Image 1: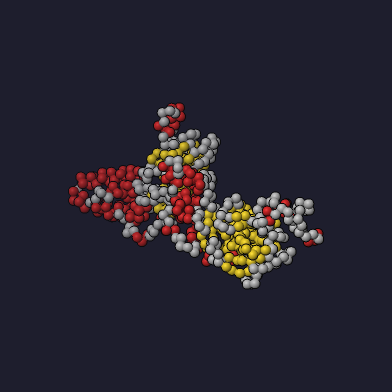
Image 2: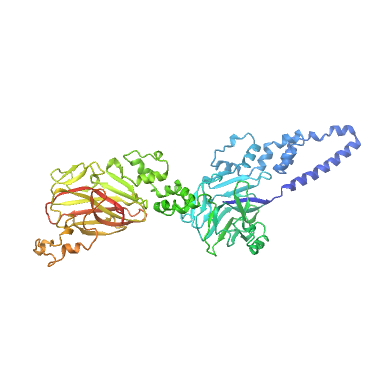
Length: 602
Protein backbone atom coordinates (compact mmCIF):
# COMPACT_ATOMS: atom_id res chain seq x y z
CA UNK A 1 0.00 0.00 0.00
CA UNK A 2 1.21 3.53 -0.73
CA UNK A 3 0.13 6.20 1.71
CA UNK A 4 0.21 9.97 1.25
CA UNK A 5 0.33 12.35 4.17
CA UNK A 6 1.08 16.04 4.62
CA UNK A 7 4.50 17.09 5.87
CA UNK A 8 4.16 20.84 6.31
CA UNK A 9 1.25 23.26 6.10
CA UNK A 10 0.54 26.93 6.80
CA UNK A 11 -1.98 26.09 9.48
CA UNK A 12 -0.82 28.59 12.05
CA UNK A 13 -0.38 31.57 9.73
CA UNK A 14 -4.06 32.53 9.97
CA UNK A 15 -3.94 32.15 13.72
CA UNK A 16 -1.07 34.59 14.01
CA UNK A 17 -2.84 37.11 11.80
CA UNK A 18 -6.01 36.79 13.85
CA UNK A 19 -4.21 37.28 17.16
CA UNK A 20 -2.46 40.39 15.89
CA UNK A 21 -5.75 41.94 14.77
CA UNK A 22 -7.36 41.14 18.11
CA UNK A 23 -4.58 42.87 20.00
CA UNK A 24 -5.06 46.07 18.00
CA UNK A 25 -8.79 46.10 18.72
CA UNK A 26 -8.17 45.69 22.44
CA UNK A 27 -5.89 48.73 22.41
CA UNK A 28 -8.58 50.82 20.71
CA UNK A 29 -11.19 49.70 23.24
CA UNK A 30 -8.92 50.71 26.12
CA UNK A 31 -8.64 54.17 24.64
CA UNK A 32 -12.40 54.48 24.48
CA UNK A 33 -12.66 53.46 28.12
CA UNK A 34 -10.29 56.27 29.17
CA UNK A 35 -12.46 58.80 27.38
CA UNK A 36 -15.85 57.62 28.60
CA UNK A 37 -16.91 54.66 30.76
CA UNK A 38 -20.46 54.92 29.46
CA UNK A 39 -19.33 54.60 25.83
CA UNK A 40 -17.26 51.55 26.78
CA UNK A 41 -20.34 49.81 28.12
CA UNK A 42 -22.12 50.48 24.86
CA UNK A 43 -19.16 49.18 22.82
CA UNK A 44 -19.21 45.68 24.30
CA UNK A 45 -16.92 43.28 22.34
CA UNK A 46 -19.43 40.49 22.69
CA UNK A 47 -22.07 42.21 20.62
CA UNK A 48 -20.06 41.66 17.42
CA UNK A 49 -22.22 40.00 14.75
CA UNK A 50 -21.91 36.23 14.83
CA UNK A 51 -21.36 36.22 11.06
CA UNK A 52 -18.27 38.36 11.53
CA UNK A 53 -16.83 35.95 14.08
CA UNK A 54 -17.70 33.03 11.82
CA UNK A 55 -15.77 34.58 8.93
CA UNK A 56 -12.77 35.15 11.15
CA UNK A 57 -12.79 31.55 12.43
CA UNK A 58 -13.12 30.14 8.91
CA UNK A 59 -9.71 31.63 8.11
CA UNK A 60 -8.00 29.62 10.86
CA UNK A 61 -7.82 25.82 11.09
CA UNK A 62 -10.06 23.04 12.48
CA UNK A 63 -7.76 22.77 15.50
CA UNK A 64 -7.94 26.51 16.24
CA UNK A 65 -11.72 26.55 15.86
CA UNK A 66 -12.11 23.74 18.39
CA UNK A 67 -9.84 25.55 20.86
CA UNK A 68 -11.62 28.90 20.43
CA UNK A 69 -15.01 27.26 20.96
CA UNK A 70 -13.99 26.93 24.62
CA UNK A 71 -13.44 30.69 25.05
CA UNK A 72 -17.06 31.87 25.18
CA UNK A 73 -20.58 30.95 24.18
CA UNK A 74 -20.33 33.31 21.21
CA UNK A 75 -17.28 31.47 19.87
CA UNK A 76 -18.94 28.16 20.68
CA UNK A 77 -21.97 29.03 18.57
CA UNK A 78 -19.85 30.28 15.68
CA UNK A 79 -17.52 27.27 15.88
CA UNK A 80 -20.43 24.91 15.18
CA UNK A 81 -21.53 26.79 12.10
CA UNK A 82 -21.86 24.88 8.82
CA UNK A 83 -20.28 27.91 7.11
CA UNK A 84 -16.98 27.22 8.87
CA UNK A 85 -16.87 23.45 8.45
CA UNK A 86 -17.97 23.63 4.81
CA UNK A 87 -14.72 25.53 4.16
CA UNK A 88 -12.66 22.94 6.03
CA UNK A 89 -14.12 20.12 3.97
CA UNK A 90 -12.40 19.37 0.63
CA UNK A 91 -14.07 21.02 -2.36
CA UNK A 92 -14.97 17.59 -3.82
CA UNK A 93 -16.29 16.05 -0.60
CA UNK A 94 -19.65 15.22 -2.21
CA UNK A 95 -17.89 13.21 -4.92
CA UNK A 96 -15.78 11.41 -2.28
CA UNK A 97 -18.82 10.46 -0.22
CA UNK A 98 -20.76 9.25 -3.27
CA UNK A 99 -17.80 7.08 -4.36
CA UNK A 100 -17.48 5.36 -0.99
CA UNK A 101 -17.83 1.59 -0.83
CA UNK A 102 -19.44 1.86 2.60
CA UNK A 103 -22.96 3.21 3.02
CA UNK A 104 -22.20 6.92 3.46
CA UNK A 105 -25.03 9.37 2.86
CA UNK A 106 -24.74 13.12 3.29
CA UNK A 107 -28.27 13.22 4.70
CA UNK A 108 -27.17 11.01 7.59
CA UNK A 109 -25.04 13.82 9.06
CA UNK A 110 -26.68 16.54 11.16
CA UNK A 111 -23.99 19.09 10.41
CA UNK A 112 -20.90 19.70 8.30
CA UNK A 113 -18.84 19.43 11.48
CA UNK A 114 -20.11 15.89 12.07
CA UNK A 115 -19.29 14.99 8.45
CA UNK A 116 -15.80 16.49 8.81
CA UNK A 117 -14.95 14.33 11.82
CA UNK A 118 -16.37 11.25 10.11
CA UNK A 119 -13.95 11.83 7.24
CA UNK A 120 -11.18 12.22 9.80
CA UNK A 121 -12.05 8.89 11.41
CA UNK A 122 -11.84 5.44 9.87
CA UNK A 123 -10.56 5.51 6.27
CA UNK A 124 -13.22 5.78 3.56
CA UNK A 125 -12.79 2.96 1.02
CA UNK A 126 -13.14 4.14 -2.58
CA UNK A 127 -13.15 2.82 -6.17
CA UNK A 128 -14.23 -0.73 -5.58
CA UNK A 129 -12.09 -1.14 -2.50
CA UNK A 130 -8.68 -0.37 -4.06
CA UNK A 131 -8.11 3.07 -2.50
CA UNK A 132 -8.83 4.76 0.80
CA UNK A 133 -9.26 8.37 1.86
CA UNK A 134 -9.35 10.36 5.07
CA UNK A 135 -8.71 13.87 6.32
CA UNK A 136 -5.95 14.95 8.66
CA UNK A 137 -7.90 16.08 11.73
CA UNK A 138 -5.90 19.19 12.61
CA UNK A 139 -5.74 20.85 9.22
CA UNK A 140 -8.24 19.06 6.95
CA UNK A 141 -5.62 18.02 4.39
CA UNK A 142 -6.39 14.95 2.27
CA UNK A 143 -4.59 11.64 2.86
CA UNK A 144 -4.85 8.82 0.33
CA UNK A 145 -3.76 5.20 0.35
CA UNK A 146 -3.44 3.12 -2.80
CA UNK A 147 -4.16 -0.53 -2.03
CA UNK A 148 -1.84 -3.30 -3.24
CA UNK A 149 -4.33 -4.14 -6.02
CA UNK A 150 -3.82 -0.62 -7.38
CA UNK A 151 -0.02 -0.88 -7.46
CA UNK A 152 2.25 -2.15 -10.19
CA UNK A 153 4.02 -5.14 -8.60
CA UNK A 154 6.51 -7.03 -10.75
CA UNK A 155 5.30 -10.65 -11.04
CA UNK A 156 2.32 -9.73 -8.86
CA UNK A 157 0.02 -11.99 -10.88
CA UNK A 158 2.35 -15.01 -10.69
CA UNK A 159 1.32 -17.29 -7.78
CA UNK A 160 4.84 -18.69 -7.40
CA UNK A 161 6.06 -15.21 -6.44
CA UNK A 162 3.14 -13.34 -4.84
CA UNK A 163 -0.01 -14.45 -3.06
CA UNK A 164 -3.13 -12.36 -2.63
CA UNK A 165 -4.83 -12.95 0.69
CA UNK A 166 -6.97 -11.21 3.28
CA UNK A 167 -5.54 -9.73 6.47
CA UNK A 168 -7.87 -8.99 9.41
CA UNK A 169 -6.06 -5.75 10.28
CA UNK A 170 -5.99 -4.38 6.73
CA UNK A 171 -8.45 -1.80 5.46
CA UNK A 172 -8.44 -3.56 2.06
CA UNK A 173 -9.98 -6.91 1.13
CA UNK A 174 -6.65 -8.32 -0.06
CA UNK A 175 -2.98 -7.61 0.45
CA UNK A 176 0.01 -8.89 -1.51
CA UNK A 177 2.30 -11.40 0.18
CA UNK A 178 5.80 -12.03 -1.16
CA UNK A 179 6.31 -15.79 -1.53
CA UNK A 180 9.75 -15.89 -3.11
CA UNK A 181 11.34 -13.47 -5.58
CA UNK A 182 14.70 -12.08 -6.64
CA UNK A 183 13.37 -9.01 -8.48
CA UNK A 184 11.51 -6.60 -6.20
CA UNK A 185 9.75 -3.67 -7.84
CA UNK A 186 6.62 -1.90 -6.60
CA UNK A 187 5.25 1.37 -7.95
CA UNK A 188 2.12 3.47 -7.87
CA UNK A 189 0.89 6.70 -9.45
CA UNK A 190 -1.48 9.41 -8.32
CA UNK A 191 -2.83 12.54 -9.99
CA UNK A 192 -1.98 15.66 -8.00
CA UNK A 193 -5.47 17.07 -8.70
CA UNK A 194 -6.78 14.58 -6.12
CA UNK A 195 -4.60 16.05 -3.37
CA UNK A 196 -4.80 19.21 -1.27
CA UNK A 197 -3.16 22.25 -2.91
CA UNK A 198 -0.22 24.19 -1.45
CA UNK A 199 0.89 21.15 0.51
CA UNK A 200 4.07 19.12 0.82
CA UNK A 201 3.23 15.41 0.70
CA UNK A 202 5.26 12.35 1.63
CA UNK A 203 4.75 8.86 0.16
CA UNK A 204 5.09 5.75 2.32
CA UNK A 205 5.12 2.04 1.53
CA UNK A 206 2.93 0.32 4.14
CA UNK A 207 3.92 -3.28 4.82
CA UNK A 208 4.63 -6.07 7.31
CA UNK A 209 7.51 -8.50 7.72
CA UNK A 210 7.04 -12.07 8.96
CA UNK A 211 9.21 -13.85 11.50
CA UNK A 212 10.34 -16.25 8.78
CA UNK A 213 11.34 -13.55 6.31
CA UNK A 214 14.74 -13.58 4.69
CA UNK A 215 16.64 -11.64 2.06
CA UNK A 216 15.13 -8.28 3.08
CA UNK A 217 18.18 -7.05 4.98
CA UNK A 218 20.61 -7.27 2.10
CA UNK A 219 21.10 -5.46 -0.16
CA UNK A 220 19.70 -1.94 -0.02
CA UNK A 221 16.60 -0.88 -1.91
CA UNK A 222 15.87 2.36 -3.74
CA UNK A 223 12.83 4.48 -3.07
CA UNK A 224 11.88 7.33 -5.38
CA UNK A 225 9.21 9.97 -5.90
CA UNK A 226 9.11 11.73 -9.27
CA UNK A 227 6.70 13.69 -11.42
CA UNK A 228 5.80 11.66 -14.50
CA UNK A 229 4.44 14.59 -16.47
CA UNK A 230 4.38 18.28 -15.85
CA UNK A 231 6.64 20.20 -13.54
CA UNK A 232 6.73 20.02 -9.81
CA UNK A 233 9.31 19.52 -7.11
CA UNK A 234 10.02 15.99 -5.82
CA UNK A 235 12.78 14.42 -3.74
CA UNK A 236 14.04 11.94 -6.36
CA UNK A 237 15.91 8.80 -5.24
CA UNK A 238 16.94 7.62 -1.80
CA UNK A 239 18.23 4.41 -0.23
CA UNK A 240 15.90 2.48 2.08
CA UNK A 241 16.11 -0.73 4.11
CA UNK A 242 13.09 -3.00 4.41
CA UNK A 243 14.40 -4.95 7.41
CA UNK A 244 13.15 -3.20 10.59
CA UNK A 245 16.01 -4.77 12.60
CA UNK A 246 18.70 -3.52 10.23
CA UNK A 247 19.71 -0.56 12.38
CA UNK A 248 19.92 -2.78 15.48
CA UNK A 249 22.28 -5.43 14.12
CA UNK A 250 25.61 -5.18 16.03
CA UNK A 251 27.34 -7.60 13.63
CA UNK A 252 26.98 -5.14 10.77
CA UNK A 253 28.52 -1.94 12.14
CA UNK A 254 29.63 -0.60 8.79
CA UNK A 255 26.21 -0.78 7.25
CA UNK A 256 24.50 0.27 10.44
CA UNK A 257 26.57 3.44 10.69
CA UNK A 258 25.83 4.32 7.07
CA UNK A 259 22.11 3.91 7.64
CA UNK A 260 21.93 6.25 10.61
CA UNK A 261 23.24 9.10 8.45
CA UNK A 262 19.86 9.32 6.69
CA UNK A 263 16.56 10.02 8.40
CA UNK A 264 13.58 8.01 7.18
CA UNK A 265 15.50 5.17 5.56
CA UNK A 266 14.40 2.57 8.10
CA UNK A 267 10.84 1.29 8.61
CA UNK A 268 8.84 2.78 11.46
CA UNK A 269 5.81 1.41 13.28
CA UNK A 270 2.37 2.86 12.55
CA UNK A 271 -0.60 3.06 14.85
CA UNK A 272 -2.53 0.42 12.88
CA UNK A 273 -0.08 -2.49 13.52
CA UNK A 274 1.59 -2.07 10.15
CA UNK A 275 4.96 -0.54 9.30
CA UNK A 276 5.85 2.17 6.84
CA UNK A 277 8.93 3.37 5.07
CA UNK A 278 9.19 6.79 3.46
CA UNK A 279 9.85 6.69 -0.28
CA UNK A 280 10.17 10.45 -0.71
CA UNK A 281 8.23 13.70 -0.81
CA UNK A 282 6.86 16.23 -3.26
CA UNK A 283 5.21 19.64 -3.22
CA UNK A 284 1.71 19.94 -4.65
CA UNK A 285 1.07 23.51 -5.72
CA UNK A 286 -2.37 23.86 -7.30
CA UNK A 287 -2.69 20.24 -8.46
CA UNK A 288 -1.61 21.19 -11.99
CA UNK A 289 1.74 19.42 -12.02
CA UNK A 290 0.34 16.13 -13.36
CA UNK A 291 1.03 12.66 -12.03
CA UNK A 292 3.48 11.60 -9.36
CA UNK A 293 5.09 8.16 -9.50
CA UNK A 294 6.33 6.46 -6.32
CA UNK A 295 8.65 3.46 -6.64
CA UNK A 296 10.42 0.94 -4.45
CA UNK A 297 12.93 -1.15 -6.39
CA UNK A 298 15.77 -3.61 -5.85
CA UNK A 299 16.67 -5.45 -9.02
CA UNK A 300 20.45 -5.36 -9.18
CA UNK A 301 21.65 -7.91 -6.64
CA UNK A 302 19.30 -10.74 -7.60
CA UNK A 303 19.03 -12.03 -4.02
CA UNK A 304 16.02 -14.20 -3.23
CA UNK A 305 13.71 -12.89 -0.54
CA UNK A 306 10.42 -13.76 1.12
CA UNK A 307 8.20 -12.77 4.05
CA UNK A 308 7.11 -9.27 3.02
CA UNK A 309 3.52 -8.47 4.21
CA UNK A 310 2.34 -12.12 4.46
CA UNK A 311 2.41 -13.40 8.01
CA UNK A 312 1.57 -17.00 9.06
CA UNK A 313 1.01 -18.17 5.48
CA UNK A 314 4.69 -18.44 4.50
CA UNK A 315 5.06 -22.23 4.89
CA UNK A 316 1.53 -22.69 3.60
CA UNK A 317 2.38 -20.77 0.44
CA UNK A 318 5.45 -22.90 -0.22
CA UNK A 319 3.53 -26.16 0.22
CA UNK A 320 0.68 -24.99 -1.99
CA UNK A 321 3.03 -24.87 -4.95
CA UNK A 322 4.12 -28.48 -4.53
CA UNK A 323 1.68 -31.38 -4.93
CA UNK A 324 -0.82 -33.17 -2.66
CA UNK A 325 1.67 -36.00 -2.26
CA UNK A 326 4.49 -33.62 -1.26
CA UNK A 327 2.20 -31.78 1.17
CA UNK A 328 1.35 -35.07 2.91
CA UNK A 329 5.04 -36.03 3.04
CA UNK A 330 6.04 -32.61 4.40
CA UNK A 331 3.47 -32.93 7.20
CA UNK A 332 5.74 -35.55 8.78
CA UNK A 333 8.68 -33.14 9.06
CA UNK A 334 7.52 -31.00 12.00
CA UNK A 335 4.47 -29.62 13.75
CA UNK A 336 4.80 -26.41 11.71
CA UNK A 337 4.61 -28.32 8.45
CA UNK A 338 1.85 -30.52 9.88
CA UNK A 339 -0.28 -27.48 10.68
CA UNK A 340 0.40 -25.91 7.28
CA UNK A 341 -0.21 -29.19 5.44
CA UNK A 342 -3.72 -29.40 6.90
CA UNK A 343 -4.56 -25.84 5.94
CA UNK A 344 -7.63 -25.19 3.81
CA UNK A 345 -5.52 -22.66 1.90
CA UNK A 346 -3.37 -25.51 0.55
CA UNK A 347 -6.11 -27.98 -0.28
CA UNK A 348 -8.27 -25.29 -1.86
CA UNK A 349 -5.50 -24.88 -4.43
CA UNK A 350 -5.21 -28.64 -4.99
CA UNK A 351 -8.93 -28.86 -5.68
CA UNK A 352 -10.01 -28.08 -9.26
CA UNK A 353 -11.19 -24.51 -9.75
CA UNK A 354 -14.69 -25.76 -10.61
CA UNK A 355 -15.02 -28.18 -7.68
CA UNK A 356 -18.18 -26.45 -6.45
CA UNK A 357 -19.82 -27.02 -9.82
CA UNK A 358 -18.71 -30.68 -9.77
CA UNK A 359 -20.17 -31.18 -6.30
CA UNK A 360 -23.45 -29.52 -7.30
CA UNK A 361 -23.83 -31.83 -10.34
CA UNK A 362 -23.17 -34.97 -8.33
CA UNK A 363 -25.87 -37.64 -8.12
CA UNK A 364 -24.70 -38.27 -4.56
CA UNK A 365 -25.22 -35.58 -1.92
CA UNK A 366 -21.76 -34.05 -1.69
CA UNK A 367 -22.57 -30.70 -0.09
CA UNK A 368 -19.34 -28.98 0.88
CA UNK A 369 -20.67 -28.35 4.40
CA UNK A 370 -20.60 -32.12 4.96
CA UNK A 371 -16.81 -32.04 4.94
CA UNK A 372 -14.81 -30.82 7.92
CA UNK A 373 -12.02 -29.47 5.71
CA UNK A 374 -10.94 -28.97 2.11
CA UNK A 375 -8.47 -31.82 2.63
CA UNK A 376 -11.31 -34.20 3.48
CA UNK A 377 -13.23 -33.09 0.38
CA UNK A 378 -10.12 -33.57 -1.76
CA UNK A 379 -9.66 -37.18 -0.69
CA UNK A 380 -13.36 -37.88 -1.22
CA UNK A 381 -13.01 -36.73 -4.82
CA UNK A 382 -9.94 -38.96 -5.13
CA UNK A 383 -11.93 -41.99 -3.94
CA UNK A 384 -14.87 -43.67 -5.64
CA UNK A 385 -15.85 -41.93 -8.88
CA UNK A 386 -18.44 -39.19 -8.45
CA UNK A 387 -21.38 -39.72 -10.81
CA UNK A 388 -22.55 -36.60 -12.63
CA UNK A 389 -25.38 -35.54 -14.90
CA UNK A 390 -27.98 -38.19 -14.01
CA UNK A 391 -25.32 -40.85 -13.63
CA UNK A 392 -24.07 -40.90 -17.23
CA UNK A 393 -20.64 -39.41 -16.49
CA UNK A 394 -18.14 -39.73 -13.68
CA UNK A 395 -15.23 -37.72 -12.36
CA UNK A 396 -12.51 -38.31 -9.83
CA UNK A 397 -9.15 -36.76 -9.03
CA UNK A 398 -5.76 -38.37 -9.32
CA UNK A 399 -4.62 -38.59 -5.70
CA UNK A 400 -0.97 -37.69 -6.35
CA UNK A 401 -1.48 -34.69 -8.60
CA UNK A 402 -5.09 -33.56 -8.21
CA UNK A 403 -5.67 -33.77 -11.98
CA UNK A 404 -9.21 -34.46 -13.16
CA UNK A 405 -10.17 -37.83 -14.66
CA UNK A 406 -13.47 -38.17 -16.55
CA UNK A 407 -15.36 -41.17 -17.85
CA UNK A 408 -18.21 -40.74 -20.31
CA UNK A 409 -20.63 -43.63 -19.89
CA UNK A 410 -21.84 -45.74 -22.82
CA UNK A 411 -25.21 -43.93 -22.72
CA UNK A 412 -23.38 -40.70 -23.64
CA UNK A 413 -21.34 -42.26 -26.46
CA UNK A 414 -22.33 -42.21 -30.11
CA UNK A 415 -22.53 -45.94 -30.93
CA UNK A 416 -23.83 -46.81 -34.38
CA UNK A 417 -27.02 -48.94 -34.19
CA UNK A 418 -26.94 -48.82 -30.36
CA UNK A 419 -30.70 -48.23 -30.21
CA UNK A 420 -31.43 -51.24 -32.41
CA UNK A 421 -32.04 -54.31 -30.17
CA UNK A 422 -30.85 -56.88 -32.73
CA UNK A 423 -27.42 -55.21 -32.74
CA UNK A 424 -26.90 -53.86 -29.21
CA UNK A 425 -28.60 -54.28 -25.87
CA UNK A 426 -28.38 -52.32 -22.64
CA UNK A 427 -27.68 -54.34 -19.51
CA UNK A 428 -26.78 -53.64 -15.87
CA UNK A 429 -23.52 -55.04 -14.51
CA UNK A 430 -22.71 -55.13 -10.79
CA UNK A 431 -19.08 -54.07 -11.29
CA UNK A 432 -19.89 -51.02 -13.43
CA UNK A 433 -20.11 -47.50 -12.02
CA UNK A 434 -22.99 -46.78 -14.43
CA UNK A 435 -26.53 -48.12 -14.30
CA UNK A 436 -26.29 -49.66 -17.76
CA UNK A 437 -23.58 -50.70 -20.20
CA UNK A 438 -23.80 -51.58 -23.91
CA UNK A 439 -23.36 -55.21 -25.06
CA UNK A 440 -22.70 -55.96 -28.71
CA UNK A 441 -25.12 -58.61 -30.06
CA UNK A 442 -24.02 -58.79 -33.68
CA UNK A 443 -22.72 -56.13 -36.09
CA UNK A 444 -20.39 -55.92 -39.04
CA UNK A 445 -20.03 -52.15 -38.72
CA UNK A 446 -18.41 -51.05 -35.44
CA UNK A 447 -18.25 -47.32 -34.81
CA UNK A 448 -17.96 -45.66 -31.37
CA UNK A 449 -17.06 -42.04 -30.72
CA UNK A 450 -17.47 -39.20 -28.25
CA UNK A 451 -16.59 -35.53 -28.00
CA UNK A 452 -15.37 -33.67 -24.92
CA UNK A 453 -14.77 -29.97 -24.30
CA UNK A 454 -11.22 -29.35 -23.06
CA UNK A 455 -12.46 -26.62 -20.70
CA UNK A 456 -13.68 -29.24 -18.22
CA UNK A 457 -10.22 -30.86 -18.00
CA UNK A 458 -7.15 -29.87 -15.98
CA UNK A 459 -5.00 -27.29 -17.80
CA UNK A 460 -1.40 -27.83 -18.96
CA UNK A 461 -1.87 -31.60 -18.91
CA UNK A 462 -1.32 -34.38 -21.44
CA UNK A 463 -4.39 -36.61 -21.44
CA UNK A 464 -4.90 -40.10 -22.84
CA UNK A 465 -8.27 -41.55 -23.89
CA UNK A 466 -9.22 -45.17 -23.19
CA UNK A 467 -12.12 -47.33 -24.32
CA UNK A 468 -13.21 -49.32 -21.23
CA UNK A 469 -14.52 -52.74 -22.25
CA UNK A 470 -15.23 -56.37 -21.35
CA UNK A 471 -15.87 -59.51 -23.36
CA UNK A 472 -18.70 -61.96 -22.93
CA UNK A 473 -18.11 -65.70 -23.11
CA UNK A 474 -19.68 -65.72 -26.58
CA UNK A 475 -17.34 -63.04 -27.98
CA UNK A 476 -16.17 -63.66 -31.55
CA UNK A 477 -14.98 -61.83 -34.65
CA UNK A 478 -12.95 -59.33 -32.62
CA UNK A 479 -9.51 -60.77 -33.28
CA UNK A 480 -9.21 -59.41 -36.80
CA UNK A 481 -9.07 -57.24 -38.70
CA UNK A 482 -7.61 -54.53 -36.41
CA UNK A 483 -9.71 -51.47 -35.58
CA UNK A 484 -8.75 -47.88 -36.25
CA UNK A 485 -8.71 -45.38 -33.40
CA UNK A 486 -8.14 -41.65 -33.42
CA UNK A 487 -7.93 -38.66 -31.11
CA UNK A 488 -8.11 -35.25 -32.75
CA UNK A 489 -9.19 -31.68 -32.13
CA UNK A 490 -12.22 -30.59 -34.09
CA UNK A 491 -11.43 -27.43 -35.99
CA UNK A 492 -7.73 -28.17 -36.34
CA UNK A 493 -6.38 -26.60 -33.14
CA UNK A 494 -4.35 -28.27 -30.40
CA UNK A 495 -1.91 -31.16 -30.38
CA UNK A 496 -3.23 -34.75 -30.58
CA UNK A 497 -1.84 -38.15 -31.57
CA UNK A 498 -4.05 -38.68 -34.63
CA UNK A 499 -4.82 -42.20 -35.87
CA UNK A 500 -3.46 -45.62 -34.92
CA UNK A 501 -4.33 -49.31 -35.19
CA UNK A 502 -5.51 -51.43 -32.26
CA UNK A 503 -6.59 -55.02 -31.70
CA UNK A 504 -9.73 -55.57 -29.65
CA UNK A 505 -9.00 -59.23 -28.87
CA UNK A 506 -6.68 -59.39 -25.83
CA UNK A 507 -5.48 -62.84 -26.99
CA UNK A 508 -4.02 -61.45 -30.22
CA UNK A 509 -0.84 -60.54 -28.44
CA UNK A 510 -0.46 -64.14 -27.32
CA UNK A 511 -0.78 -65.68 -30.81
CA UNK A 512 2.41 -64.78 -32.69
CA UNK A 513 1.74 -67.54 -35.23
CA UNK A 514 -1.40 -65.88 -36.59
CA UNK A 515 -1.21 -62.98 -38.98
CA UNK A 516 -3.89 -61.00 -40.76
CA UNK A 517 -3.04 -59.96 -44.32
CA UNK A 518 -5.28 -57.52 -46.23
CA UNK A 519 -7.74 -59.06 -48.73
CA UNK A 520 -6.37 -56.99 -51.58
CA UNK A 521 -3.26 -59.16 -51.58
CA UNK A 522 -5.40 -62.28 -52.00
CA UNK A 523 -4.12 -63.82 -48.80
CA UNK A 524 -6.00 -65.37 -45.89
CA UNK A 525 -5.16 -66.35 -42.35
CA UNK A 526 -1.99 -68.36 -42.27
CA UNK A 527 0.12 -69.93 -39.68
CA UNK A 528 3.82 -69.18 -39.47
CA UNK A 529 3.26 -65.48 -39.78
CA UNK A 530 6.96 -64.77 -39.33
CA UNK A 531 7.51 -66.00 -42.88
CA UNK A 532 5.02 -63.56 -44.33
CA UNK A 533 4.43 -59.84 -43.79
CA UNK A 534 4.85 -59.23 -40.05
CA UNK A 535 1.32 -58.04 -39.25
CA UNK A 536 0.85 -59.08 -35.61
CA UNK A 537 4.51 -59.05 -34.73
CA UNK A 538 4.75 -55.40 -35.84
CA UNK A 539 1.74 -54.55 -33.68
CA UNK A 540 3.54 -55.91 -30.65
CA UNK A 541 6.12 -53.19 -31.01
CA UNK A 542 3.55 -50.47 -30.19
CA UNK A 543 2.52 -50.09 -26.59
CA UNK A 544 -1.19 -49.67 -26.01
CA UNK A 545 -2.42 -51.43 -29.13
CA UNK A 546 -3.86 -54.35 -27.15
CA UNK A 547 -6.40 -54.33 -24.31
CA UNK A 548 -4.98 -54.50 -20.81
CA UNK A 549 -6.39 -55.17 -17.37
CA UNK A 550 -7.59 -52.33 -15.15
CA UNK A 551 -7.82 -52.33 -11.37
CA UNK A 552 -11.63 -52.28 -11.38
CA UNK A 553 -12.21 -55.61 -13.16
CA UNK A 554 -12.54 -54.09 -16.63
CA UNK A 555 -10.11 -53.80 -19.55
CA UNK A 556 -9.05 -50.75 -21.51
CA UNK A 557 -7.45 -49.96 -24.81
CA UNK A 558 -5.75 -46.64 -25.52
CA UNK A 559 -7.29 -44.59 -28.30
CA UNK A 560 -4.64 -41.86 -28.32
CA UNK A 561 -3.52 -38.77 -26.41
CA UNK A 562 -3.68 -34.99 -26.60
CA UNK A 563 -2.28 -31.96 -24.79
CA UNK A 564 -4.68 -29.62 -23.01
CA UNK A 565 -3.14 -26.16 -22.65
CA UNK A 566 -5.50 -23.72 -20.98
CA UNK A 567 -8.68 -25.43 -22.17
CA UNK A 568 -8.97 -23.02 -25.10
CA UNK A 569 -8.37 -25.52 -27.91
CA UNK A 570 -12.02 -26.49 -28.11
CA UNK A 571 -13.46 -29.95 -28.53
CA UNK A 572 -11.57 -33.26 -28.77
CA UNK A 573 -13.09 -36.19 -30.66
CA UNK A 574 -12.17 -39.78 -29.69
CA UNK A 575 -13.18 -42.58 -32.02
CA UNK A 576 -12.91 -46.36 -32.55
CA UNK A 577 -14.12 -47.95 -35.75
CA UNK A 578 -13.85 -51.09 -37.85
CA UNK A 579 -16.01 -50.58 -40.90
CA UNK A 580 -13.97 -51.78 -43.88
CA UNK A 581 -13.79 -55.58 -43.67
CA UNK A 582 -17.47 -56.25 -43.04
CA UNK A 583 -16.76 -59.10 -40.60
CA UNK A 584 -19.54 -59.92 -38.13
CA UNK A 585 -18.57 -59.59 -34.48
CA UNK A 586 -20.25 -59.97 -31.10
CA UNK A 587 -19.62 -60.16 -27.35
CA UNK A 588 -18.01 -56.73 -26.82
CA UNK A 589 -19.29 -54.94 -23.68
CA UNK A 590 -18.66 -51.17 -23.53
CA UNK A 591 -18.70 -49.27 -20.22
CA UNK A 592 -17.48 -45.93 -21.56
CA UNK A 593 -14.50 -43.85 -22.65
CA UNK A 594 -12.20 -42.54 -19.93
CA UNK A 595 -10.01 -39.47 -20.26
CA UNK A 596 -7.23 -39.20 -17.68
CA UNK A 597 -3.72 -37.72 -17.45
CA UNK A 598 -1.28 -39.83 -19.43
CA UNK A 599 0.88 -42.15 -17.36
CA UNK A 600 -1.69 -42.56 -14.57
CA UNK A 601 -2.93 -46.11 -14.08
CA UNK A 602 -6.32 -47.11 -12.71
